[in-house]
Image (cartoon, rainbow, N blue to C red; front, top):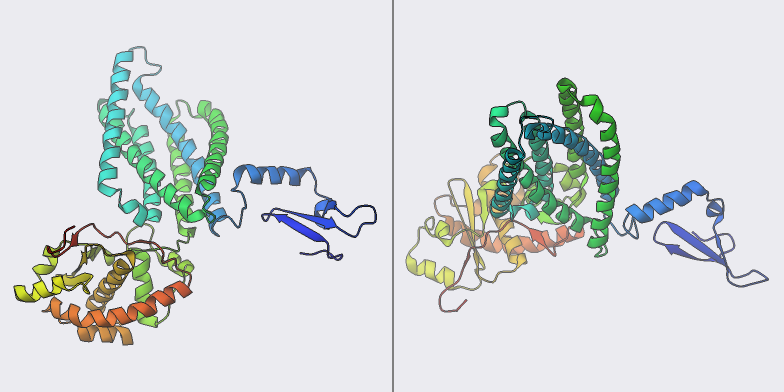
Amino acid sequence: MVTEKNDLFETYGASQRYYYDLKDEETNHIQHYNQKEKHKGFANKIKETFKSGFLPQGYPTSVSEDYLEYQLWDTVQAFCSSITGMLATQAILKGYGVGNEKATVMAASITWMLKDGAGMIGRIMFAWLKGTQLDCDAKRWRLCADVLNDTAIFLDLLAPIFKSYFIFIACLSSITRSIVGVAGGATRAALTLHQARRNNMADVSAKDGSQETLVNLMALIASFILTPIVADRPILVWFLFILFTFFHLFANYRAVSCVVMETLNMNRLYIVMQHFIEHEAFLSPKQVNKLEPVLRRHCNFKDICIGSKLGSIIRTYKIHNSDLEEILKNERNQYIVSFDQGKVYVALRHGVDDSIILQSSIMAILLDIALRSSDINSQYLNSIRSCIDKGNPHSTFQRLKPYVEDLNVKLVKGLSANGWDLTKYHLNADEWRYQWPDKAL
C-alpha cells in the first residue's frame, strides 16, 4: 500500500515493508517504516524473530494456503504424543527392571536387542509391502501412522502388567512403532512437498523440524512436572493416556482433513468423475478434499486395477487369437480395458506416459460407475451404458474407447481450469506393461 506521499517502498516477503522518502530536503534516501511500523514495539520484534526462526522464508506466499492450519493441528498432536510417549517410557523401563534389584543387565540387554530386532524387521517388511502406496494416499497413511503410534504406546503400557508376556508385547510394540517411522516419515515428506511452493522443500522441512523440536521441549518440561505425580499411580497414568490420546487423534484428523491436495489420486479422481457424471460440473481441489475419506479408501475404486497383467484381460475377451493379436499389435491401443465379476482391469502398453494412465483411469472409473450405479441418470452415463455389453468386454472397450478419448479432452481442460495440477499423478498404477515381441524392450 502506497503512502499519502507516494513514497517508494519495498517489501520483505509479506512480513516487512520499508518506505523511502525521496522528497526530503536534506537527503534523497531516508529509509523509514510506514505509520503502523513506526510504533513497532518489543513484542512485534519478538514476533518477527519467531517467524523468521520457525516459519519458511517468504511465508505465507512461499507455502500452500493450508500450511498454517495444518501446522497448528500438527503442533497439538506432537505435544500430546510426547506426553503419552513419556508415560510409555516409564512403563517400558519398569518392564526392563529399572528399580528392581532382581533384574540383571544381561536380561535387560537381551530384551532390548530382541525388541530392536523385531522393529528392524517390521520396518523392512512394511516398506516392501506398502511403500508404493504412501505417495498415492499420503493423508490416509499419515493418520494411520498416528493411530499406530498410539497403539504402540498402549502396548508399552500393557507390557509391565503382563510380565510373563513382556518380551512378546515389547516386540509387538516395536514392530508397530517401526511402521509409524516408515509411514510417518514418508507421508511427512509427501506433505512437505505439497506445502513447498517455491521449490523450498528443504526450508519447509527444516522449519517443521524446528517447530517439532520446540513442541517437544515444551512437552519435556510438562513431563518433568507430571513424572513424579504419576509415579506409582496407574489409574492416573491410564487417565492421562486416554485423555491425551483422544486429543492426539482428534488433532491428527483435523490436520490431515485440512490439507488440500491439488494432485489427483484414485480417491480424488473417482470423486471428481462421479460428480461430473451426475451434475456435469467439475469440483475444485478444495471441494474434493472435503469429500475425500481419510479413514479409508473410496469404497469403489479398490476394484479397479490399473497396470494389471495382460492375462486378466485375455481370459475375459471372448475373441479369436487373430483378433487379439490385431488389438495388441495396433499401437493406437495404448491400453486395454476389461471387466469381470465387478472388477475393472486396465492393461498398459510398454512406454505409456502419465497422460495415457490418466485417460485409462478415467475410462475404468466411468465403466465402474456405469456398472454399479443403475439409479443414476445422466447424459454421459447413458452414453456409456449404451456402449456396454456385459457379456463381451472386448466389444464394450472397442465402442467405449472413441467416446472416452473425445471426453478426455473436455475433462482435462475442465480439471486444469478448476485448479488441478495435471503435471503429475498418484494413481497407484502397477508396473505390468505389454508389448508385441517384434520390438525389443
